[in-house]
Length: 353
Image 1 (tube, rainbow, N blue to C red):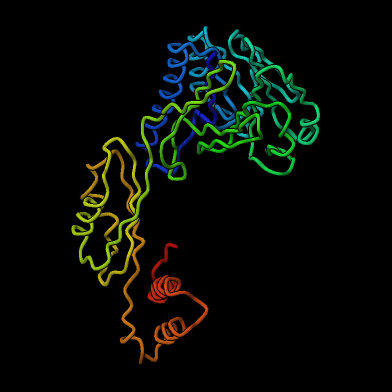
Image 2: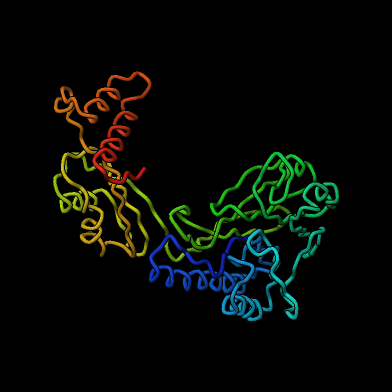
């Protein structure tokens, strides 16, 4: 038997960290990834897709996203979609929806059985945040999968998954949603708990590859990560110390970063410079814009401080530089950052920390 574990689709996400035109394209690519995953399930003998919360980005989802989701589920009748709601779509209503292969959960434990596998799920709320653990009853002779949505914790609470209270309960696989980065951790001698991550990255806090988990049951469980994202979002830093102009900075970036034309990148320019970098972000972006799908450049450089200039300066800047450089409270790296930001502020400029 084959089962897919995924979560945090976030259909309808505004993707505010990206420019509007890029965000609109990414919304379509996110829908494509969900449909492509459903096609994979149909074409590879998958019986169940476990959706562990936040299929929609908001409860008041607009019809285009709702209808898309229902259409994909209806068009794959050989696959059961087990939908457990998360914190983003907790109050979503499904009244009037009659789709035989869309299976839902509530605030008490619900079980769906397939061959030798039992799949349990519960949606978190204030009333069951503590009691849910004592009401979970599993058959140790079966393969037991448990679906939940929340942050793993040593404590109980709404939107928390208390790992200590789930150990040694007969769980083979604890399928989680809420964290958008994939992870896989031992629960106890019998089982594991896993976040599948989201299908598509939506911003620079969701870097790297993304997957859905393919679970194969043949007496035991085997898990394979299947790549799902149309694009990856990457972040890297390039030290441009000593660079005098934006074109040279762009060439150094080009020499150090192996750009994939399909990916989205944020490049942080770092190091000490003794030239004006006010236009570096704009100019470097323009020089490199064809290297990848979308590029964002951030100027994180520090203005090189010539201590000999300020050493005898009786101005506020001089007092500031002398105080920082003579202090024993900070490391050399911290001193450079403090000097960089402080001098920018004293010159009437904004300081981006």
